[in-house]
Length: 65
Image 1 (cartoon, rainbow, N blue to C red):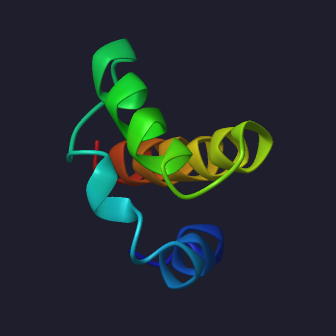
Image 2 (image 1 turned 180 degrees about the vertical axis):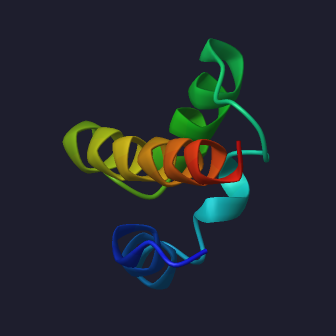
């Protein structure tokens, strides 16, 4: 995919991308990812990272469909 935004997100959050499975983010998958992120980050940072992970998934879904 050629989205520069998605490419930057993948480079920056490469280690965390696996926390969200492929496909549309759901409340359950986002909650699970947040729990994993909270183990390493404070609440604010974990939420910001989660937002970026969700954005990457949405860009991929939008471009693929």
